[in-house]
Amino acid sequence: MGIRKRSTTQRPPDLDSLCSALLLAYLRSNAPPHALHIPLCNLPRGDLTLRPEFGAVLRAASLTPDDVLTLSELPPPEALRPEDTRWLLVDHNALTGPLGRTYGARVVGCVDHHEDEGAVPRDADPRVIEKSGSCASLIVGLCRDAWDALDEDAQTDAHLARLALAPILTDTKRLGDAHKTTAHDERAAAYAEAKLRGASDGEYDRTAFFGGLSELKRDLSALSLRDILRKDYKEWTEGAPSDDDDADPGSPPSKLKLGTSSVPRPLSFLVQKAGGSTEKLAEALGAWAAERGLDLVAVLTASETDGVFGRELLVWGRGGPRAVDAARGFAEAQGEPLGLRTWGAGSLDAMPGDGGEWRACWTQGSLQSSRKQVAPMLREAMRRALSA
Image (cartoon, rainbow, N blue to C red; front, side):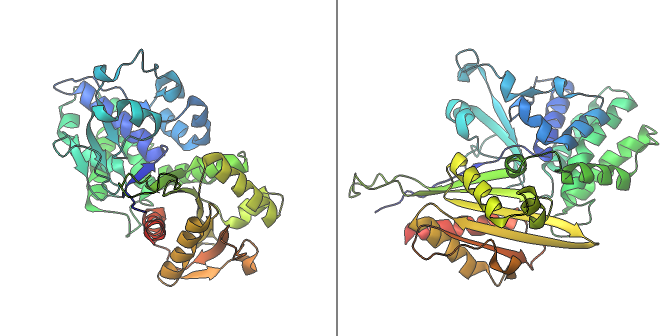
C-alpha cells in the first residue's frame, strides 16, 4: 500500500495562544497603518473556565472574559464568507478542523514558535516561525515599533506589558528554563518590564506575578478527569488514505491519530482523582480516547514535589496493530534517551501482546524533554509504523 505522507496538528489554545492573539490584534489595529485585526480565542466560551490563569491575566489588563471573542460567537460560514476574511495565525501555523476546512485558503500570515508544517504560504506577511519559549515573545519582537508608535497612556502600556509577560514568564519558568528560554524571550521580557517601570507600576513583581499564574495553572481541584485531560491537550494525525493507482480500493485508511494531554500534577494526583484506582484511571483515559477517536494516547506530567522537579509519561497504543507498533517502537527507540523507568511497579501497564493494545507508564529521567520534544518522537514512531 502506498502512503501519502501528511501530518495535521490540532492545538487548542493555551495561555500563550490567547494572550498572543489579543496582543497582536491590539498593536496592529491601533498603530499605523491602523488595519483592524479581530482577535479570536479558538475555543468555545464554556472552555474559558478551564483556564483560570487567563482570567487572571485579563483582570491584570483591565479586561474580562466578556471582552474576548470565542468560537461560540463566530458567525456561521454563510454569514462570514471566506472571501470576506483574512486570517493571521498565532501560536500555530496550520489552520485545522472546521475553521481550516472553511477558511484555510484565506490564511495570509502567521507568528509561531512550533515546527513549520508548510501550510502557510512562503510569501505570507508576516511569516515568522522561529524557536522561542513563548509565541508572545515573537509578537513583541515583531510589533515593537508599532508598540512604541502607540499614542497611549502609561497605564495602557502597563496592561499590554502584563498581557505579554504572562505567557513569556510562564512558558520559560520566569526565564529560568535554559532549554526553553531564547534571546527572543529575554529581549521581550526586558522590553515589557521597561514599559511597566515607565508606567511607575509599583505593584509588579516578577516572582509574585509568575508564582500567582503558576499556582492557578496547577490548581486542578475543581476539574473532572475529563476536563484535566482536555485542559492542555494537543493532537496530531499522521498519514492519509492512499490514492496511488495500485492501491487496493478496499484497504483501510493508513493513518494514526495521537492525542497528548499535559498535566501540571503527578500521575498519583490523577489516580486519586479516579478514586485511588489505576484501573479507573485507565477507564477514564480509554473513554477520552474513544471520544476523540485516538489511536495513541499520551499523558505527560510535570510537577514539583518537596522542591524536586519530575516528569512522568504514559503512552497507550489502542487503535490496532499499527498503533501498537508505534507505541512499542517509541519505547524501544526513546526509552534510553528519555531515561524511562517503569512507574508504579507497572500498575498502569497493559501489554497483552495480541496486537490490540499496548500501554506503558514511566518516570522520565530526561527532565528537559517536554511535549515539544516528546510529541515529535511519537509522531516519528507513527510514521515508521505506517510505512512498515
